[in-house]
Length: 299
Length: 230
Image (cartoon, rainbow over all chains, first blue to last red; front, side, top):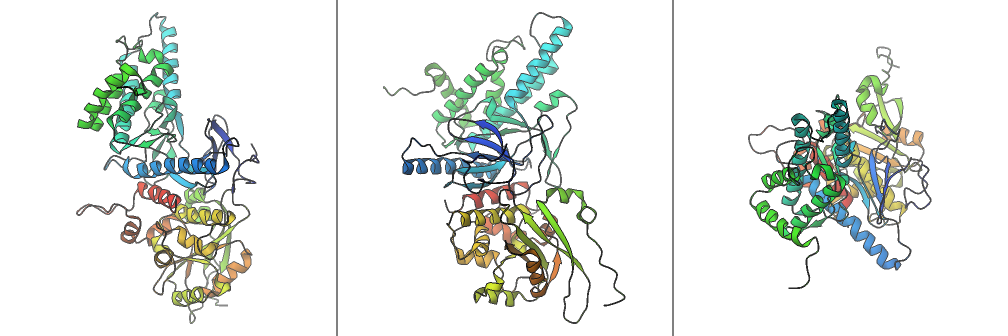
């Protein structure tokens, strides 16, 4: 797609390709090259680019001064959180690459933020793929129920535990994400090579696709907060999003367990990652479940 | 010419530096040039001053070169202090640079700020030096990242201009050994203690092996530079 005329400087008139990846109420995300032209191409759709460029376009219905100020604040807030996490989120000594995309560039005045492109699939796509494989297996075996094999369940459980651990580490860093959904998480398809450059790892089986490192995306609603309330709401939002995106997993149809048992893997790993503070958060989560996300303004 | 000297060895990037490095380069035009240096000794050498086109800044090509063991740093600095327009280059101290991405992130920001008319320093070249610094102190940024009388290894950058002229000028006026600007060459020259101090990176604990800066360092540094001034 050629650069749209709406793009801010210096992207306006750029010869690089911009591929629109997502469009939300606040911004548009493109895949493009940034700082270097070295980039891999997605095998499925022939799209290339080594960076994700998020642009917050001016909103013509807002007063221009207010519009500039809001755009500026929001881009800055997101970039600050990402940079803070780029240093603090890596678990001490484990040498993993970041669990958030690195910030490559930003201009709050023009309203854009460029981050590293993460190769891989969203957790949502990963779990959907897993569910699809269970369906195929079941049809082959001509079984009526949904129950998956223990080995298959363990693949899914391991994924859920890694999600819980990364959300826990995020909260320990003093950040709440604000919009935890399975579409805002990715399973990285790359492993860092000794040279420090990402090399695509050829997946031998589909289950490998669920075994990469979890990367959190879209910190547009993130806040610096250490309040149990905010942390509990973060978990609650994830729980609800998970329930509506992957209802069969949530209901325990694959494991034959009671509803919510699979999600407990997330919460248990969260508790391990957060320690004492996590216990209080999980207790708070019970309250939030009772009343919903919005704290009552009465009493 | 010196008959005993072999014909310049052509450094096709793929052979000399390996295909891996080649992949990491932005659109690059390489020129192989013969250089004279070291007044008494007549040496034939090959080197590469790159023309780099940063994505989205196709109208602002960069000429980039690395010079090792520079003998006339004091002279170059003097030209900058005197505001000699011929020497309007970004001369960087190579020992505090982490990687090509580090250098290019500063270049991108400097050119972008120029396009948006908000340079904080005199011109786009001084702005590149300033943009490498994690804080807003201009004098300090020049001291840390610019050329000083004792600087040994220099990265020279020019934004725009005529490529052939720039190449000839750098060959003539920098008394040093030209080398390719690569992540590997910067890593071998890097003064890790100084880089850690400037960017407040974690140092390895006592007794632990020095393992280089690690993957996290570059991402944090690029992020800090992007956030600077806001």
